[in-house]
Image (cartoon, rainbow, N blue to C red; front, top):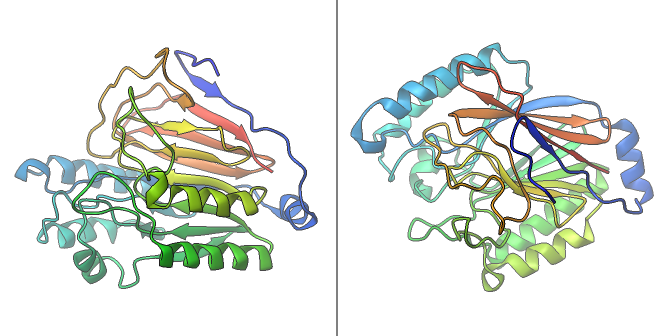
Length: 292
């Protein structure tokens, strides 16, 4: 797929035959918007720069119209325990629900102590089941999905089918294989990638997306497992220009805006829109894809 330099890149998902339950969900899926933030890294470099940006994000989220916020990991930097209450003090000012997952910088015991006792969890909104699970490890940038988690994910998707819901899966480390010019951080086949894709194939007309943080280079995604897409979202702390736009070796999609910010996600009407929102500014950068 060609990558466009400015404004937005549009990629339409492939067509497929829908089950009767998926058709029913399509007819009743209302349009709604939510927000995605990730990689706040509170305490990075032992200064308050990341905290100041998190406060700005919170202020903007309070003025935004989305129903809730997903935080896709690395709440604090390098597991600094003293920074979790600092993060939470700002988080409590946000006037809508916030749902976090851990990243590789978040020790699970501290995440459970300060954020949420149950690490892997799910919730429903607007006909969609959002499934949040930890696939990161403090000792590695790679991702890992272990057999007990695969069983739990299997049960979550079965519950989504029973309730006639679509599903969005959220974990910090991308599942999709990525090499140069990407970072090379993903869930390898021996660490759960093969089994997860096999499970998603069984629910391919129900799963809308796999959402991740971790990369710190703006919106970066893949659409070769249609009809769902896989996407890494921009950091609230810092983003790096890895020269992905128009790179001849790149597969998938990028959104050409590397300013610090968050993403507004709109589902419904047969499409998913990822609209980028840099802090204190506006942007026309977006990615739109068809959904079942």
